[in-house]
Amino acid sequence: MSKTKLTYLNFTGRAEPIRYMLLHAGVEFEDCRLSREEFFNNKQNFPLGQVPILEFEGKTLYQSHAIYRFLAKRFNLEGKDEWDAYWCDVAFQTILDVGYAFHHDRGWEREEKSEAVMARHASDLTKAAYLLDKLESQLEKNDGHFLKGQLSYADFYLAANFNTLNYKAGENIFVNKPRLNALKEKIDNLPAIRAYLDKCPPVRF
Ligand SMILES: N[C@@H](CCC(=O)N[C@@H](CS)C(=O)NCC(=O)O)C(=O)O
Image 1 (tube, protein in one colour):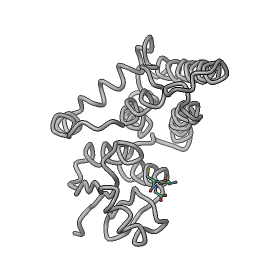
Image 2 (image 1 turned 120 degrees about the vertical axis):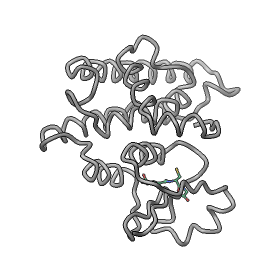
Image 3 (image 1 turned 45 degrees about the vertical axis):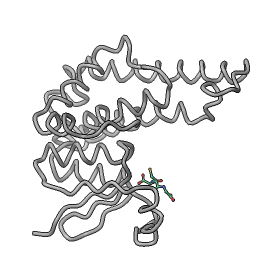
């Protein structure tokens, strides 16, 4: 059996949902975290010159979202039919949108705290809060998961991105979001994920 190897940088970022799914599925893998220098020395060897890449069953997978969906299919993490898969994708894409709300230049945390910059940041926070409320409603309808009664890749995506989203927002955007917090806790406390989190070195995002 060929070795499974995930190559990324020393961040959670796009790789963390892959780490979570592999860990939960009990797949042993090499978690290769390149330094900036190592990345640029190897860039030409990666299919699109980017990471993450996942070597799995003798093939090289790239494009993070395609990898998430591939693993979701392989590990039965997108529900029982295409309707479940659809709602799982909706949650995933809504979480992505929360992150996109903060893709603006981060003038609000540097010197440039002009009225315009601060107004834009406030508007980003409002948009994110609106989307997070929609995600809360989806969890409420489904007894605490994005799909009722089952784990899905959207659950893993949320937990794996929690800290990154707060980093992008510059504050904890999950205050008063009890269901999202509970889901993150539940995923982070799955045995294989807990064991990983307890020993992985702290990273900024
Ligand atoms: N669409 C790609 C984007 C990957 C990507 O931009 N990765 C970053 C690291 S987070 C990277 O490799 N950047 C270096 C570069 O593009 O030169 C994916 O989601 O996998």
